[in-house]
Length: 61
Image 1 (cartoon, rainbow, N blue to C red):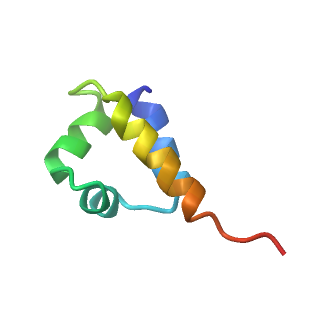
Image 2 (tube, rainbow, N blue to C red):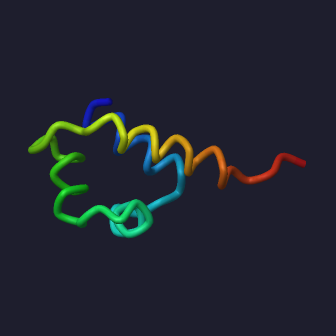
């Protein structure tokens, strides 16, 4: 997952960077570095975000 994909996924899940970091128990600065491309996004971060988004998706009418 690229930095841009992580950011887009986080935003689609309706999370702020702070919330994503807190919920995933990742230091905010680390999450920020992933989204800005300063650090490579580990696969587990993308998998966690996808799982979170799937479990917290609004119900369809």
